[in-house]
Image (cartoon, rainbow over all chains, first blue to last red; front, top):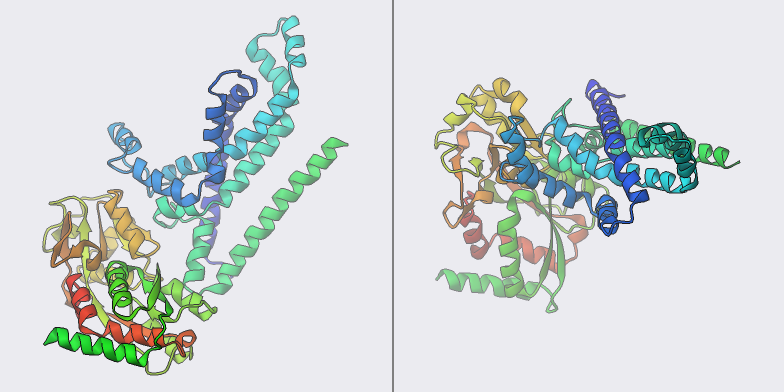
Length: 223
Length: 249
């Protein structure tokens, strides 16, 4: 059966995913909007940076985060100067890592949703003298709602499924950085296969459920 | 005299092996990475056999070997894991031997952080102390034992960060994210001196000896190259390399 440490890992994972998703929606929305609307020469470069975590191995991301957030790295020196200390081995550090790691899973669905709206509704809003913010909240947001749902669900699920980055910057501290995937890894390494099965099966069920709901909803929406 | 002996040994190894060069797949405890790379190079030069090395945590290798991993020789970070494998019948009977005795070091990448008596642990003026995962890494078990013997285990519990194996533990300290940590002496020691930073060579009486055993696994039973490597590890050349990294024998 599952132990108290397992439940602590589950709670921590859900917390991490929730915080990460919230931050990603706030950061990702303007980035996606810009990517969807801009004709700037920078579009290609920014789009590529956003997509980087899709193709980079977690070891590369984890290694660079560890170096950058370390005492000699630029991020580490900034956080130290601000009196925040160092980010590795802390929940805040995992959030920073997860935000970067799950970035494309939030930005890309939003960007597609914004692009799908097209010029027309915005022009209509403009002729009705709606301001930019008003247009965004009363026209764009409702039209892009399915995109937001997809972005939030994928961002959350992808963060729950994170492993390599957390392993490299987390330090495996109970209730601070030991998420479910790391806990499973520990169980497997220590030959505690029964506990590993409980958590692993839970992950499979959770992931299937999330994707199933997402896909069923998409089909419903198309009808 | 010694070189003659070494040459004779090599000749013996060569003659009992096949004439053709072969490959041998070796699982190596992470703490033995650097010396093993050197030994493998010498081994290939002397015997023509090529050793394919995989480095990792002893506990992980144990799980992989039990589940049919294709390793032929296993260099463990302890003596209990090879003994367990022997009991389970996944090793060649009688092939187990101690190839090195590990030494623990409390190390910081910064000079002047760790004193040569480990007093820094009692002062506790640091945010993170890195250790290898005691669930899977013998060096992690030894590190916790040292903390208990010094009576600082409880005081420092909240400052522990755990590396997946001794290599990752070293990385935490080397990158400066943990101010100090318990690593294998071999990782920070070369040619009889510290390679950088500051360290306390932990006295052997503070923890159970880190006897590191090697075995020929069942998959290496009929492989002359596996036998040759096991013999080579006990030879004079390997012994010199092992010693230069601070291991006892």
